[in-house]
Image (cartoon, rainbow over all chains, first blue to last red; front, side, top):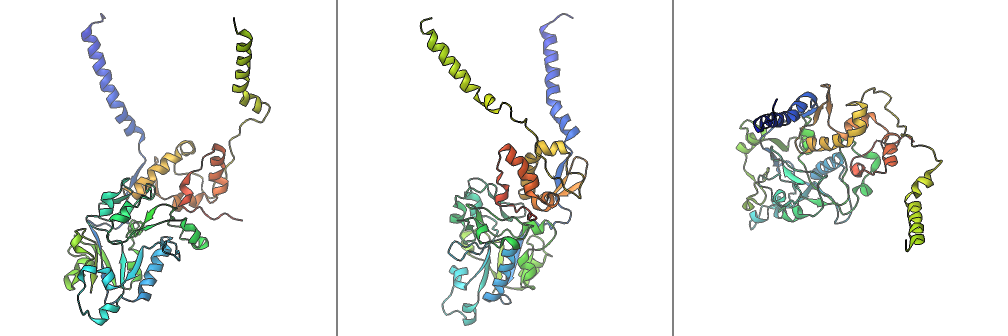
Length: 256
Length: 126
């Protein structure tokens, strides 16, 4: 066959098309291994929590929940101001500084309020994270990817709820290494950590640790589902959220 | 050649220095692949031995993004079998000794993966 420019272009075109097809064919032939979502996992469009502070309001009660949460997630107890906290307690004026009134009910002044990460709809921590180590999942849980955290602490500066803790030292120095929860890793020095709404438990179809330990005082569910337990409680009782004027739309509601 | 002697002497010294590692290792035993302890109750890993040997780091890298960022915590391997995506709950359940399995090759290859800074290796039987 005589070599002509026309023939050359024809074959060049065919071989270029072949080049485009081979990766696709290869992927079809070999790429069978893939991940899927656990069948048992709990699904929601927007996870939310309602805490009934009429039932859950003493230091002891909240400490019990915090201990369970901290043990499950291998959170160390460091007896200085470098302590790590996922769940802690505070007074009314500390929890709701802008919603404080004069001459408050005495009983309310004595109440302690369980605080945790609010898993906001518009999380400022996610917006400022330079490495996307903290990110918002599709179900609005604000999660941490400790593999990516570089410890810059922008997120701690951005969070208006003080929900984040920095590991100034190796947390394992303050953990009972014989009594670790082997189902959850620890963290390393130099990363920021916080409550994760127990994503690892939701993935296996279980409710968060504090919810199961609260004996009904904490309700957890999908905020977008009108039949969810969360919406049922919200319909019945008056609730407030922390620092609503900031517009972060927290996902934790408090019945007063 | 004007500086012949100096050039040749320099070349000899250069060659001796460059080939020093070869002289240094002359006569020592050949490299042997480390003998790792395989799990006693499991015959097969999640993928073939050859694949795991060459690609376990890529696999673990993919696993961590799938589980954590995408929320996909079940792995379907190339044979269609399901595994939970978890270093601690899946890998380390069979490979119960970090010292006799992981460390052997890592030390040989001179790599120190920082997985263990957070993920808890199983307790070594003493």
